Length: 260
Image (cartoon, rainbow, N blue to C red):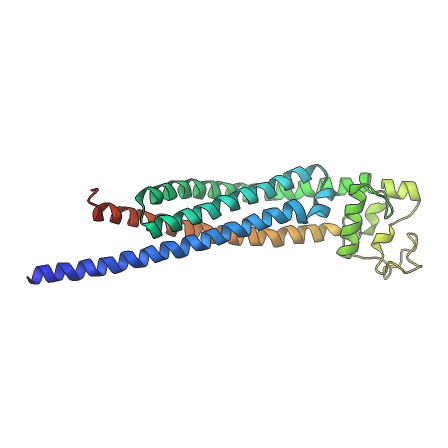
């Protein structure tokens, strides 16, 4: 009788532990699902909200758009997996839990490989962005009144972010814009757009934005990289926890249903 009582107490404790793990599974997968929606939103921003920056990156714009698509795809998959994990835990379905574990394991491995590639090729990507963006300024920028997408994109960036040129206003020397107009810088570089003295010839530093747009571009990319990196790191930790919990629940349900 004593042993039966002890067994009952142990079983009750185990049931409480399993219940806690079940709710932990729901909580973790809820966060994974939320993180998926964050990446999905970031990808949509890259696709639809960063048009100006995409245009000035020249040939690299296609890669940036691809990054946006990757964020959209990964975000959608994570949101789906989070939902799948929640369903498996809530319904106590072994098939869903096993499917969840297999998919999350594959994604976790892919995320680790992706993170390594980003760290290895970070300097290469930055150099590529620098080369393609400066080339678009030197060869594709036609002036504030131009209607082409590259010129409009540069005008939007220089006016909106209060910057001038790639590194600074001297970048326009020898550019197509300077050769065609004879000006040293466009009106978009003016600190005050309506200032008559800022005429493209007066080099007074108080009239022109001194900050180059490359720093603005890099700051924006780094800002978004922090969001991506923080979200990805958090999701990886949660995925590990979710994999462990899903295996424990899978085994528990197998014992409970006399599968093993």
